[in-house]
Length: 521
Image 1: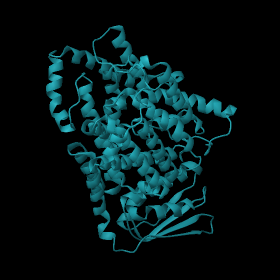
Image 2 (image 1 turned 90 degrees about the horizontal axis):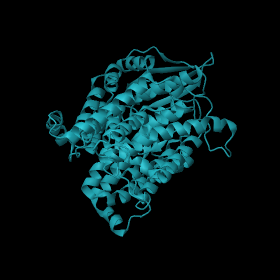
Image 3 (image 1 turned 180 degrees about the vertical axis):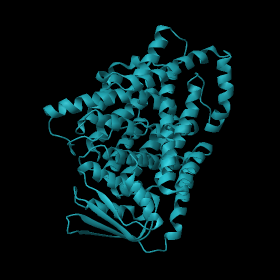
Image 4 (image 1 turned 120 degrees about the horizontal axis):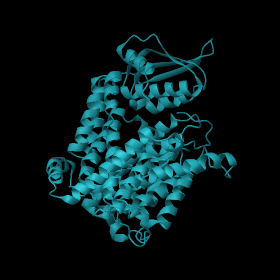
């Protein structure tokens, strides 16, 4: 779906057009965000209100200063597994300083202009990482679905699933069976609503409808299952800033490593979301470095409040675009609705069963796995990228997220090592007699030259046909092919301009031609 004019900055006033577009969109995003903020806090092992506070900061603060007008930020499922491990190992008091340090790293990275480099991370590694996180979420939340406590790691959780569900089926744990029924009802209502909802009610997200249904069942039947715990004063702990002892933990190498991991993963997720949102509208392109710096400021503030870290979130962002948002006001207003909700109706959160939130997270985790990414990588780029995807996924689940990502990046390097000695990428552009623009690539095109190539392609006038010549190109890796595919797809959808590959002959040219002919959407 593509939308029309988008405001890059923040309009000085709320015009009638913005009120008619951004106000309704903000309410839609708010309804999407509520169950996700609660569920991600649950999966992270922290109080529910900390997820809401991250959503508020991501909406209001990052919405004001970010570089992607239609992106919506907040707590992300992709970081839940990391935060759970941090809280288990270092305690919840260490979360604030770690998130603050991660935010500072992001701010520095944005100032150094490293935002565009996150786009150079191999798509096989990114999607393998997200798939691995999806598996971890599903495995852990299956225990929460039956009101059991999550186990220390994914392998233990996976091994314990048959016994745990065996006890539920045999009614050895009646509470578990009751919670399972509520969780499954939540999933069924969510999926059923998404498939059959009336056109007039399409703005109501399935996750919210599912949570409301699960909560209503538990409340009407007075079921003895676990519910979300909310303190009497929601903001009491939020404004208790970390002390010297908590900040002193940053001297520990393991704590600093945790901050670095959060910074890298949060930045990669944000840049991935930015790229996806850019493809959904025809307005100004996102400013990656500004968005990265804004995410860092937001995470630093979340760290001061001891809240969850945030990223740009594709679920909320796509809902924002599809609801017709035109400017930053939508994200900002959604954050204000979250703040008003947690301030005025905190007791409403206590009506939500944890099994209902687990059901939402299981669906979310399953959707992160997306096996079609692996099939697409194999079909368009060959066996090696698909193997990188699989290796990253397996190691994220079997060892840990950092190991999986580092090994995935190392394997992705294997693809380009034989070509490092070849001449570097050279890009020439020129105007043809028929009014089209020629783009000639020569040398070796790998992710190491991706920022250079992106800069050159950004200078190609919009709305003009492009002749892409690769006869002098010695090699092109799958990361660069994916970027060229997205660029060609964006030009085609944005203004009807065609990107034509001139006489492909070598194998890497044929793969590029196939990718341009069937871009990933």
